[in-house]
Image (cartoon, rainbow, N blue to C red; front, side, top):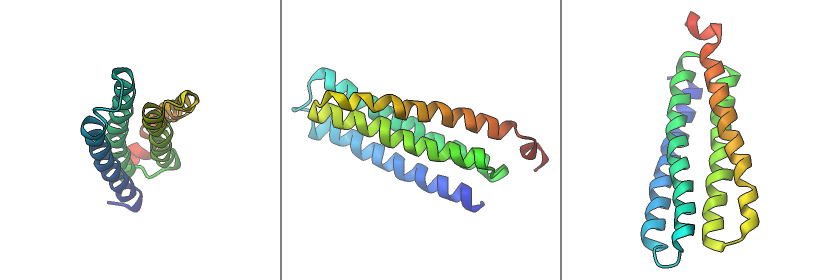
Length: 130
């Protein structure tokens, strides 16, 4: 396993552990304080964090075969997206500060660009050569 792969396996595992902890906290610790609507918002943040933590494992897999800049940027943008998208939803649901919802699409855009870069990194010729 190369250094780039190792890095994204580490971050994937870390963000998965955080998603489990944050999800459990929301389900148990915040059960009484979140409205149904805000519980859905919180759950959306957890769900996307899970998906993109798993996505970091996909980045690590591709980086093992093709450790190019596009693949590395895909991983970093997934992390960026999780921080902005999921954390803004966690904060919004807990604080009810509605302008935090304006940050969420920036993280979502990071997710989209990350997946496109990962696909592009897989498509590169250097991937086929290895």
